[in-house]
Image (tube, rainbow, N blue to C red; front, side):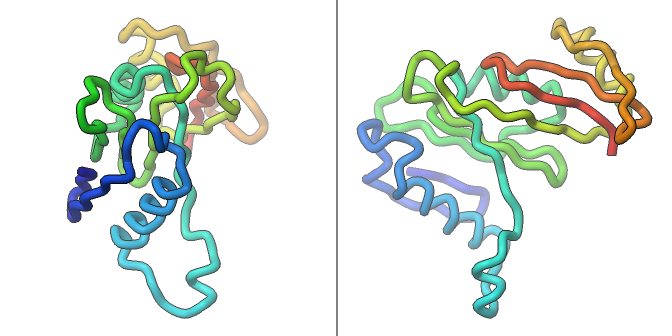
Length: 167
């Protein structure tokens, strides 16, 4: 059973053998996103991207959710396959930002596609200080022409690159 904050859907096809990134699972998320936003409308609105949400393949959904909790994300939704002990998926939110985590099918997450995620915060130095205090190893703040308050790099538990900068 997949539970959202406003909808429950029984899904017998969400089993480990189908995989978390199966076309059926992807279609289900598109339906949920459309339902959650109450979108519809004319033909143009159905073909235009309204937003994009990254889904990161991780070794441990629980460990990664805890890591992203230090960046202000809270778990809004999860999926635990029947009979499983570990989460296979989580939806995280921090204000208007959303992120999905999914347990990687391969035990070595280094085979996953790599991307750089830009996280926009109000106070770069304060965010870096809090991460240091929490035991993480953010890189130094570096000034860029596009980021007068600077930006710094932080790797998540699976090696994904996060660049933290200001709004």
